[in-house]
Amino acid sequence: MFKKIGRALTVSVFSLIIAGAAGAQEKPKVAFVPQLIGIPYFNAMEAGGNKAAKELGVDFIYSGPVDTNPVDQLQIVQSLIDQGVGAISVSVLDASSIAPVVKAAEAKGIKLFTSDSDAPESGRAVYVAQATDEGLGSTIIDELVKRVGEDAKIGIVSGEATASNLNAWIGFMQKQASAKYPKLQLLEPQYAGGTAQRAAQISTDLMAANPDLKAIIAVASTTCPGVAQAIETAGKTGSVIGTGYCSPNTARSYIKSGAFGFSVLWDPARLGYLTVWAGKQLIDGKKFEAENKVPGFDQAVTYDAQKGILLLGPPAVFTAENVDKFDF
Picture 1 (cartoon, rainbow, N blue to C red):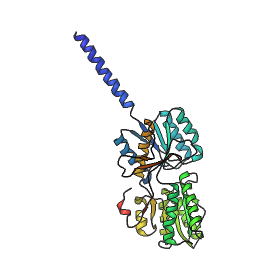
Picture 2 (tube, rainbow, N blue to C red):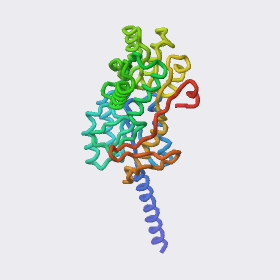
Picture 3 (cartoon, rainbow, N blue to C red):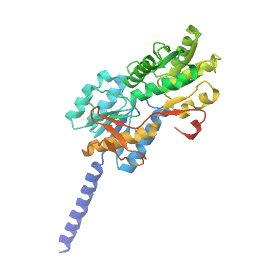
Picture 4 (spheres, one colour):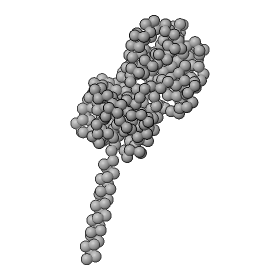
């Protein structure tokens, strides 16, 4: 009898261990692959993703290239697919090359989606957008015109030439200038890759070649310091206004020095949180509604079913008056 009880207990304990192991294995895994690791912007997205993972019961994987190399990024995505990660989000560096990995993910039942930078023709499951591309492009032009006038000459220093999000913002800048400010002169975009040093050199050259230049727009967060430092080094603070899509922590000293008049962005930590939330929804097979209640968000997160876009909200403008209220 005691042997039977002992065996029963052993079987019960073994069953509990197996059940516990299965439960641990069933915890959803959501990954995010940024364009570049080690910069404040994507660090903030990582922090938001970690917060969401803890609150939503998800394992969060953050892995990206050490420089803005589309080939390296795709290799990381493929590795995550091979590992069987349930949902993988990507801030796309090259929209033209991601479709094959989307198909590879689908073949394994993995949800591959985009966040921060889109590839709309790739077949991705959803795009978690920080703000509309149109809103970002038009906002920076409207705010700049307030400071430099409607007939100013403006330079543009972007990051990677293949980055779909950066190119979309530039496109809407050009569209806004053409439609609303026909006398505004937007120079052809210059591409600095992922380095502030290259952005500084391009900005210096732009100012030298265009003595009447009134402003320079840093389109990538990595180019913001280079643009600002070039303006300061050239002694153009006040006469050439810098701006860009820069986090408050990146732009703060330049806004206070006057090298930057303002910056436009959103809260990347909230974007990281929304990315993980969206990944869990996809794993759970839940459909996005026109308006979605996300934990910790005061306002509903909207979803455009036709375009497959989950929208964080409108862009924010950071100035000398409000920049100290933010820490990211």
